View (spheres, rainbow, N blue to C red):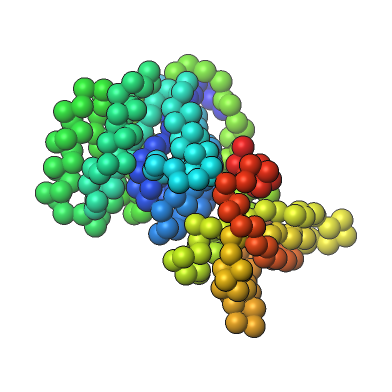
Length: 302
């Protein structure tokens, strides 16, 4: 590390479901640490991404906090996700409010803006998905946000292809303060391997399952063990669902679906761990588990 001044800070990314928060954090840190899918509220927990950079006058470390999409809760899991999103607004150097330009500012965005109006941290807005939105729609959103006195700056980006992301990072760098390097230079997230592996399995299930199933699934890691004599990691995981009919869909005809989920997840997990993986998946029915405190705690939603 150089002898230049060092700055650091935490930045919370908040937005409505599917605004592109996880895609953006993955883009900035240069590695997949937060799962992504077309399903709303894919992110259920707070996930930290670490980015190290160099400016002309100082080196810095930015810790981005990815949060669940803000929506009115329908169960205990939803209440947990909302509390995680709002609690992440406390004691950070900046808040990044992300808006989906293909949808515009809707009721969920208004909920967030109302909350951000009271933020003690500076708020920067980024209008995302400009690669697929109409320019006039982007300008209309920008005009609305620019009139919010608590928003310091409004930028336009595409998290998926990187347009405007470097400029956004440069702007966020100005909010870093003199402070320590919180994480080692080669660390991109503080999430445990077990957690990331469970998320990768859930991501593949979200991609492959029918519309009525994904919101009702959770994934727990039952075993995670490195073999002493071989470069192999043994992982067994349970996919929880709420109905017997959903269990049948997850397993699939002659086990085809669970096999597809396992094969796809194993490839990502092997890339993450740099080892061969023996992945075993099981399915259990837990009616209304999203309202069960004990199961929510078991799956890490606490």
